[in-house]
Length: 548
Picture 1 (cartoon, rainbow, N blue to C red):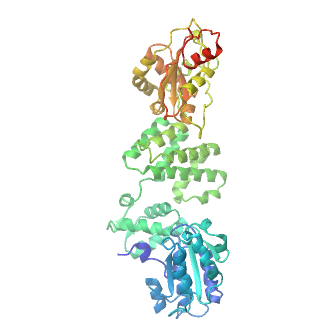
Picture 2 (picture 1 turned 30 degrees about the vertical axis):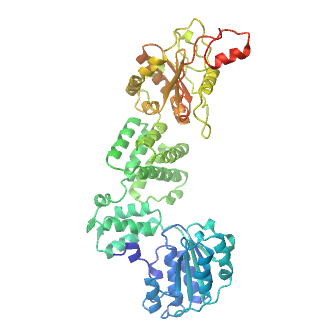
Picture 3 (picture 1 turned 90 degrees about the vertical axis):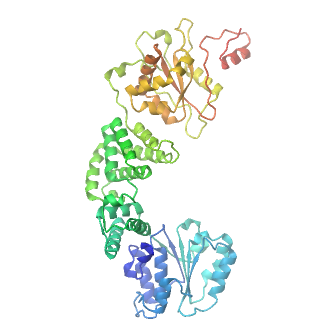
């Protein structure tokens, strides 16, 4: 049984979907007899390059084609042989499996020397021509530039940039465009009618959207749905084949972002996961819908560039336009594009999307008292003044950024700490116990959960690495985790939970690190005695000791 895209491959010019700018030019050349000797068809997969190449071959060799017309009869021996793929005068060559000089010489150059056996023209259709080697291209050049009058070349490629300029310059070039959604839906509906299968239009629209402008992909998806053997197909049946993700769910997620409702957004996301939603497709849909809103916000005309076709959904989506600024939409798109890269590698499938929501939705404090929770600034905090009014938290600048080493070794950690933390006076309170912090870490994470649902997600990917006085140093792997934990609200919530768990005042300092060399260090808090030997004194400080 042949697949749908082979069964319904266009056999006449009138059956070709889209590519009108190419069809009209080729038809006029055939009608006037002013054919180029070489054509170059470029474009993405499944949009009709090989189909039009075969139509060119059929039209120029059809013995029953009326003068001044371009439509092949489809009935003569030449048309039938080309349709069935066994015409000896139309050679289809897969360049991916015939890349060498010898293949080009034997299959093309030597064959072009002989007249066609039965037809008027000998047509060479070279698919994926960019796969030929440099030597093969050089061997083909002369024949391609000055072929015999009875030879026509049709080169097809999905990667035009890989072709030498010398090859491109010798061909008449045609750039194929993706088929628009409406044309794909009409084509799929025609096939469904031919197969006598009733199918919901929304299913056809979903197929058209997922094909991303490739008609062959759309027909392939339709064939998978038809293979279920159901004569009436609704969205429910199609959901067994199509990846489960729809724009109504995406719109709901965007609504949660506008409402700044992190808790409900995380619950909704996890419910989608339990229902079997394809997370990669969901992420792509979020990006696409955000792009649509962004384009529409910039100009109503630009909104037509999106693949989304549901008019009702478009109207509902446009309601979000007033709730987002251009910068917010750009941040949403950038965040989900970044997190999409981590989806396949994450041991918790939905974790990258949860992190995206945490980064996009500013967490509101659970009660007003969190605004007065103790916090410190690395520049002016002094443990001796713990009983006085606390200073306001300030986000610390990132120690390192993307592309740099992210986990400092012991000396790097101490250098960062000594540069930012204040000197501890001799009359301060006793320092925190690092062992106690490690033993109560899980209890601390549970306590944080009571105040904030998103903060434990970040803290579980970090670890305490040391203490300095009453400052607990927490090492994180990623810069955006450091940014989030350094926010005043987030850090004050964590410090509140840490203080309650330890039963004594505690503060938090966030350090960017690298899991390739994790080190746990309890940094000495006692002042280093003065030494007459500056070198010995520096070494003692570097290793957290004292000079006796």
